[in-house]
Length: 114
Length: 110
Image (cartoon, rainbow over all chains, first blue to last red; front, side):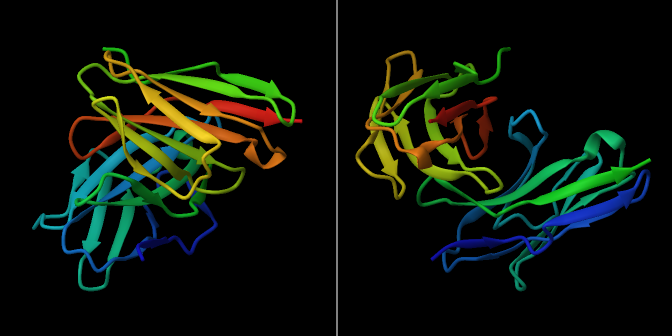
């Protein structure tokens, strides 16, 4: 069965520092996609970054990068130069390309300290 | 370009009642998925609609049903509400691999 594991329930990071949010996944499918979403207290799930299982390079989107280590089944999110507005819940998620549903991890609550 | 919209934003119902939640997808998106997010948890997949048909379903009882209209908008219906149905209900639309979410509907069942 497919599964996403986020082992950090909460993190506190000083503003302007880089932060890494951990995510490991489990699947036997060869073709899948990995996502990170940000959920502020308002509740909306904001798409941050996507990595396909066949992509050779790690995905980057502005201050966000995804450290994809396929052999270790790891897809960590790196946020560079953290800002106060980055304080939110962060979810790692996976989609098998044979179907379209997304499986989410339990999330990591990130607190950025001034 | 409007993103995914959902209505209503909040809803309070009592046990046994029925509820209908609505979702309008992002422009150009033809697929709508619904998720339930209980407090402190990640979203759980309910079902997905494409071309007005339910294409996939998660592990939810038949009390949860849906519909997709020709303009790709969608409804989620929940019958015989239980206290445990209290959650944030998220709609997501997609055209390719990425699903974009709406702001959600917070349902409280008393």
